[in-house]
Amino acid sequence: MTSVSSTLPRPRASVAWTALPDGAVLFATETEVYYALNTVGAVVWELLSGDCASLDALCTAVSVRFPEAGPGEVRADVTELLDDLLNAGLLEPR
Image 1 (cartoon, helix red, strand yellow):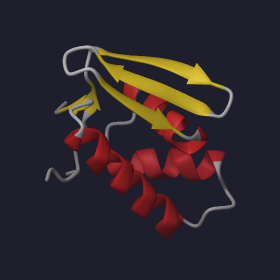
Image 2 (tube, one colour; image 1 turned 90 degrees about the horizontal axis):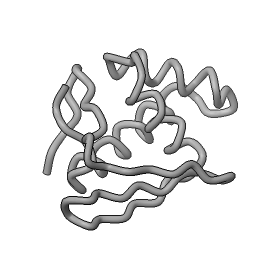
Image 3 (cartoon, helix red, strand yellow; image 1 turned 120 degrees about the horizontal axis):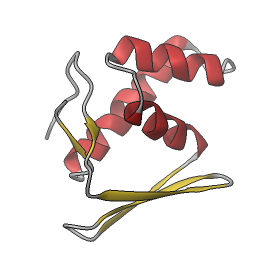
Image 4 (spheres, one colour; image 1 turned 120 degrees about the vertical axis):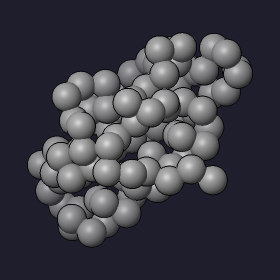
C-alpha cells in the first residue's frame, strides 16, 4: 500500500480522463483500469494536473471549492483518494 507524502504525486501521462456533469472517469491505457470520480474527486484530479505541489495547498484549494466540508474531513478524504489513485497506478511521483 502506497501512502501520500508531503510532495504530491501527479497524474500518469498514460491516463486518459473525461469530465462528466457529476465527476469524471479515468482510464489507464497501460493497465486498462477504469476509475470513476465524483465531483470532488474530479476537482482533485484537475488540481493535481495543475500547480498544486503540496498536500496542504491541495486541501486548501478543495476547501475553497467545497466550503461546506470541514478542513479535517477534506484532508482525510483527499488523502484517501490519493492513496486509492496511487494504488490503482493512476498517479506517479512528481
